[in-house]
Image 1: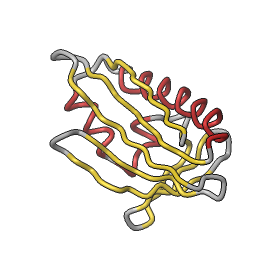
Image 2: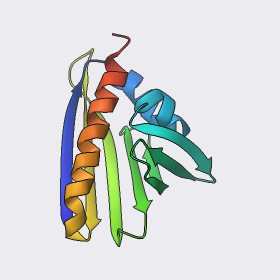
Image 3: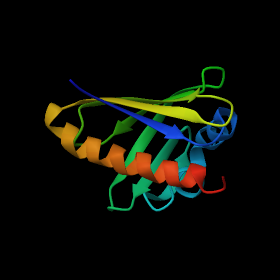
Image 4: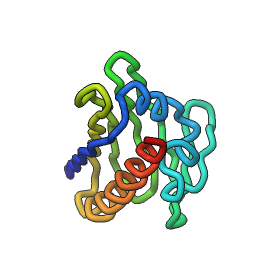
Length: 132
């Protein structure tokens, strides 16, 4: 099973960043605009459209406000397994670290997924730091 881990230092306090992650239906406007072009809720799931045209269903598995952790699973025909988490960890008073981990099958999907996670991490950093 492929496992991909991205850590991104964000120059913004953890509670502020978590509030954006916690707003699960606004990923296209508050978290990663430009990278994500649309997001709509379908019950507890979200349907996410990316700038490259890919549309996925993300099953929201768990939101833990105390740990500032969001777990979700992408459902597509190309992936036989996907589970990912975002964790927002304080790194001083005015910044935090976002840890994004994805485990997936098949292994040969890892290259494309890692590229998407790189682009997504850059978009999140830009957006979360823009008002600083």
